[in-house]
Image 1 (cartoon, rainbow, N blue to C red):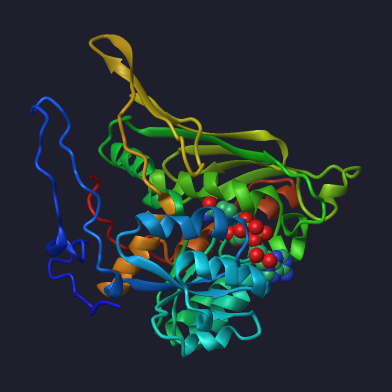
Image 2 (tube, rainbow, N blue to C red; image 1 turned 180 degrees about the vertical axis):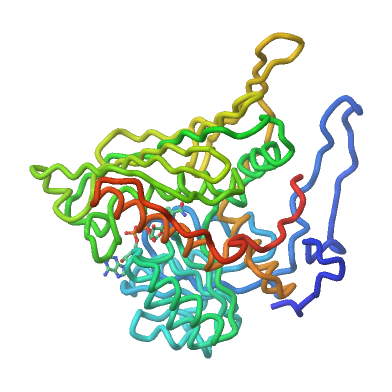
Length: 398
Ligand code: NAD
């Protein structure tokens, strides 16, 4: 791993500017300038990641994302399926000595080059493995939702403080350029005063035996798995924290998939400024995902939203007396590479991740208030967090 490079200005900076390589511009000044990717950190100085859990997200998204990461490399695997781990290790150039199972997790402590442990296990296992990773002194990137309860989240934060390790929750959309452009537009008042956020994130689950439908392993149903994207977006895009929620759950009694968890969750969250966020999440409807921000002077819409690829952003506002649609050309980037690179920069430059444990804890607080509201059938208040929940500095948008 590269030596720690403190950020002198306090501004996020790329750790490898010196190795930047650019091609000459061959198009006229009327065209957008071309930029080569990178600058990439040389392989022998990259931040080493151990991937824990070789399921869908690890195989389909996270491991392929290392190919476009600027600063990270996969160096170790933790899996209960050794034949699978051997195949994946060979594909990504990971040494056989750097494969272990869950019982042998603590072997990561002695494995050379392991700087960050990325927990990609069912939600109900995040708590145990974050605690175990903190105990062996490794930095941690943990998938969303952070855990199954606020008590677990608080313990995870405390364990990472005790172990003097960084903890980041993998809220990939906060590192994604379209969401960042939207956040900037809201901050700059491009939509006027934000009044309302409306969002949906749903999919149709099949196999009733999968962990996502098991309360202990998942923590809940559609809400903590897919609804959390709408919830988190309403917080980071508005820059506000909800102070009240009212919610209702649907859990059909005759559907074997929903014996333990909700099929759908509908939420209205109220924010101190008077803004509201209304969102729905479902496990029993065809894939549907959109996000709309309504302001006094215009609206912005991402549709589809929350996916790995293919999000589309448009703004509508009055220009020259006419309602005008704007479609900013924002280049798609691999969200997992961006997220892991942020973690790597925090490790290299000894900074706090933007989406640390407090950000995950706050979502969990609201999730608990949503479940309480649905159970009791009334508006439920939420205490404001003690301080800012998003800390880190991000590199400027390109
Ligand atoms: P998955 O079921 O495909 O993979 C889970 C892995 O955990 C498998 O390799 C499985 O063998 C292993 N595992 C170990 N112990 C297990 C147990 N007791 N029961 C079940 N599996 C066990 O799940 P996934 O879709 O890869 O999700 C993993 C995590 O990533 C979850 O926390 C999920 O919320 C999160 N996730 C995040 C995103 C995102 O966009 N950030 C997308 C999907 C999933």
